[in-house]
Image (cartoon, rainbow, N blue to C red; front, side):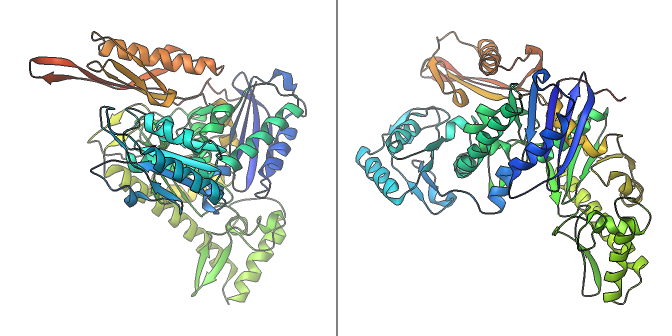
Length: 554
């Protein structure tokens, strides 16, 4: 049995999946001031008739890290960067406590200039006196040689509770993105780990001793222990659950649009040739580009509980949510109330819902029918506009999916898959607005939780080898060792896959070699005065995102 929990903006959904079938489900209102209580309530709901000892995995998607950044509840971070010549690190400053230190390493991992030990010691003392407890240390070419990052970390350990080292977050070469990634990883570290502590304690109290995994932005999961060191990877785990839910529920073979219409937002994703499109270089977090590899999604402030209001004679929908719809006891009319008024949905206290629309219309000397129509049109048009905008962006550059690079192809989706509570009410409206076939899976209301439950663990690593220097380095694993001159690309590919599987195995995650993809494999001869002196080798591999087992529709 697998439990999936999706903490959404309005509701927290939970399911128990056994043999590919949902055997229990629960939906509770999300308490944004106490996400833990929402998870506990959802767990309690699905475990009423389930033996917790039979649970083999619990996967959770959470908005915690995203919310902390959006709401400004992050911790101050001391950022120490080492760049060397050719770039001004001050151009990439994040946060008020940003320091540049001496020393540099070149693109092959050769130390050009060592850090000034006295400067580092003085800076460390200053940071400690400032009261900073979390840090990010980033060197320009730390993915080739992390020695300077390690030295800076050691200098901070006297007062640091946590230090993010840039080379441990990604093997990809992009200094500005690595700075922002390390910064945000430390900024949410404490609030995320307090949540992780509480989650771990709660599931044990409910008698669940199975591994707990957290959904990542790339559409995979990571063990809870790993997420404690890499909390930035949990950003956008909600939209990832949406995409994995539709993969589990529908057999998608063509270019498609995915819509998850929740109570607060609508999340949009694009599939190319049946595979989700990804942000290959990394997503933007708080306006800074990062190295967090993620599914390509867009979220807009249109949901079933989006408040209706009239401004300059026009009916507006959202983006704010001030509570549930009036049919569910809310105080102000929402988009769901407009759908109920028009007979497109039936939910809760229908008469109160209709009265709310009539009262709002009377305040603006409007006919209730006209107000409800205008609200629905505004919502549908906003969704349609956002879909076309995202599609234009995706088509404006090479398309990367979780499987491959699709270069030069123009995506022309002919089908739209819709999930979320209001999905059925919107299906006909979206068919007309998007001029595409719309499908709503039977389990649309709990699709995210199903996606969370069935998502498998993913991991990505990059291996670099310089046979002239006799060095092999795997940044994200912190491995740096010796290779012989005869080391070639085939050896590197085999080692990369083996080390990836070994790393996951140490975390209790069993992955078959057939689920590991080689994304990149390059070998370049290095030529000296008398011919070839060695090879520069790079291999990138991943466990591709997907579902662990097929979903079975009853």
